[in-house]
Length: 279
Image 1 (tube, rainbow, N blue to C red):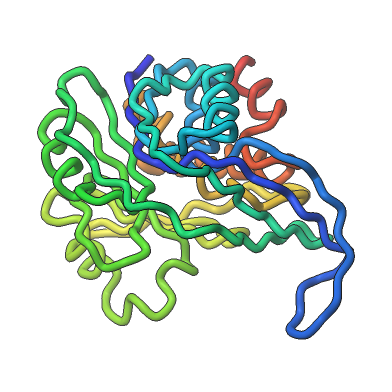
Image 2 (cartoon, rainbow, N blue to C red; image 1 turned 180 degrees about the vertical axis):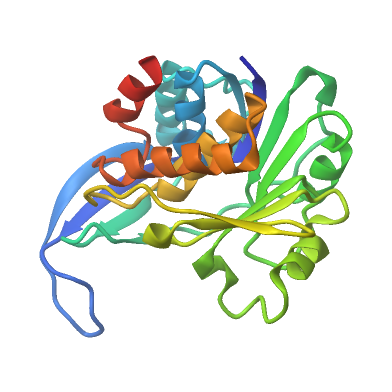
């Protein structure tokens, strides 16, 4: 079992299921799918809890009823929420607009600025995973490099994010990487980077390193809901890396977790992944 710190959003998602694919100027009917726990903190963290790891969450929610609901749901799932900060204000719902083919569009409110305080004692953690736009995140990841494994998602902006493993989807790269991928990644992650993992849905993923690259195919499954697939992939990758597996083995595990995620009608991992880990 590893002690893992996740720096990621945790949300209250409201699912709106449309009757047809989105198109400009269209009119749509929807069914309200209700509220459900979501965000990278939950989508990544819950699977890691099921895999036997101790998972602490650093995030921010409002000091209101929805914030209380989020923390209650996350704690019930086994996430340690003692490092989640509360801000004065409302925790707005995230809208997940789902089309019949399982593709989703996310509509989210502007979040208040989340400024990180001093980093924790990294000696107590085996891994740090970041998937957040929090202010001060680069300082956290850099300070952790000598003490634990640091895995980061590519940021939405151009800020550096020192880490050992950098993860991005092919869509994250659009319009941003016009050069050799390893060089691009090292400009973000620095000299500590070991692998740059780029996922591409059903086409699998490629891990780039300084001298090589390796392709690992996707695990195909029936698509029900694509929400959280990338978060699940990251969780499977981190799980096997904490088990001292190779990058290829970790990517294969990430692909399995992502396949379970897209076949589940939820943002957080479903029972099929739980049963897989139990067996």
